[in-house]
Image (cartoon, rainbow, N blue to C red; front, side, top):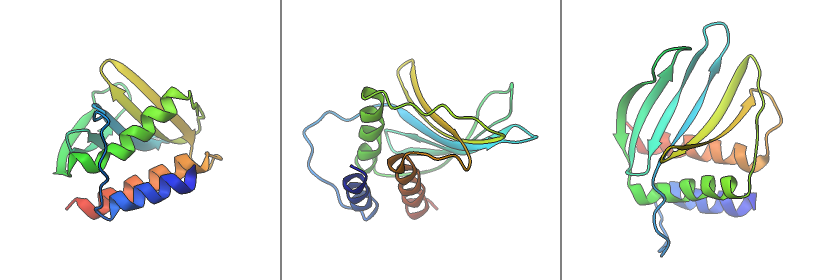
Length: 142
């Protein structure tokens, strides 16, 4: 499973796409990390329309976002489909720690969140997902 996800994701990063008759997944996902003594969380918010934002949030305050670029929406669909698959199979990671990392998938009014303490053991497929998304964003954003 992990190997097939990595192959698919790396093809996406390389700019390849596959014909897919499935309806596109609509929503957004947030990759973030933070905590510590400041409580600041930062990361990226990726929307299914291809818009990407730099995201941050302090405890008790509203999210702050700054648009940082746009990527082809169809190149994001493998990421969104992976999040849907994890949600459907009820994958849960609910760790905590002084510093945490998370993935939050938002669609409609629903939120699906995986969260772990930095340094915790995380399923290999989840860590691969985070790595591939970060690589994708570095390659496609200014």
